[in-house]
Image (cartoon, rainbow, N blue to C red; front, side, top):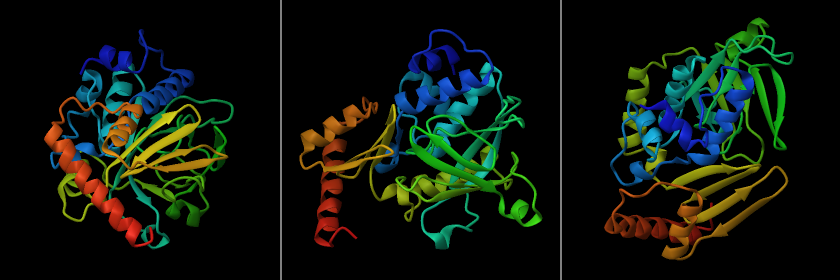
Length: 290
């Protein structure tokens, strides 16, 4: 991977220094310029996790959480940031909160203390789709960004023992406007082999939620933009607008707005995916949009 090419894609002409301000700028540029997506999974040809950083540098689609954070981790490490990985489980239903399945990769950048974050540990995550646009300090409590409210709590074991939040384990509550409820981060295995096994399950498994519906997400300043199937969502801290995309042309325009690279997708693949996506949307309509 060429870090200079990756940085140019983020709109940066020079290598930034290792500091909190640079980390924030890199993080926000990534979520605004490189969309989160599962298009390759929808096309039944999931991209490898190991080549995520190269795709980012080459201007291609990067993918979903494992791929996004693996790419960003590679860039940060090359720039000199002290990074480490954490096992994470994203949940929406309360019944799934304590599941120990690896379905997300979290990153920690350490060694950057500030007055508000004296421990110097930051949660870096460009793979959550519609969550924070800049790193969150690993400090217990509520954090506000662009009007959205997020909460970091102690890991379940640490909470029971009364220990403060640290870089090994924590819990996260998303803003009520978010598309998921929370994340549980632990020190369970999150090495490349564990991530590759999880990616095989989520990228190709018949029961994977990533195979059910096309999802593309990008931040635009304080607005989170998501195309989910045939519905375009535009969410800020104070407003939410959802628009049904009813024609093939409008669907493709929505994907262009999300800045998703699609040069490798054939017209036949588009037509097949549109027919499947539109059919699922109509069935959802008939069922009363449960």
